[in-house]
Image (cartoon, rainbow, N blue to C red; front, side, top):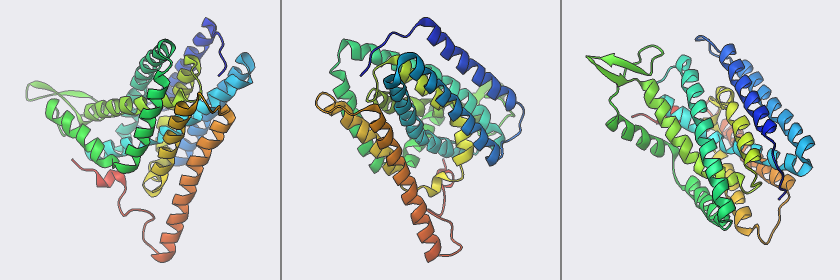
Length: 324
């Protein structure tokens, strides 16, 4: 893998891009207006364009291989972040968070993820520099995560998180406008918005334990890993608005995500003997997701032919299946 020195101004440029992007997003989505699916798709494509423009900068400034590594890391994080979208659906459904308040929770959740991802990435990079064999540990963890993803149901996992929080956090089951905390009967309690935010942050840390090591399968450069993570996370809110109604019908998507994790794990475990070029990684990741989505859509069409008028996929989506 290529090694290069990242000047301070490059980090400053990344900080400016992220700060300006967040400011624009907050300004454009002030108030309680909910994006239509078409508008959310435009925003999602806009965030992808920002990431690709930064990708071009990396390739020009640090070389083609660095650009390929950034693209592979970005695509990897973007793919695995779909699992976060399932969590959003489950948490919002369980707590009955209205659509008008979901964007507010997601904005704060993404801000927290930017901080926690940074801590995990730089801690992981420092550990890998000190103990390079740690990459084998990362690889084994990713293979285990892939198997776990195939075997476990997200509903049960996120319900456990919410139940654990509900037992330990004084909270009210009623919304209090936009507030995360409210005073009820003389004491301060958390609202469902706070419970949703904490649940999303905790599960994001769990997901980061998988996705951050996966990024080390394509590059060991902290700048590339962190920038690709940030630019993938920035588009999560818009991506959720685009895919929220479709996730339940993508029945085989988890198999694709598990394949992505298994590929990254195998790459780390066998990296000393088998070198996989970054562009091959890009193709493998894109192929896993494309096959899973195509298989899901084909199964949905088959179901509609067999039972006309019945909804594709499962009868109830994750948001309806998960209730506290």
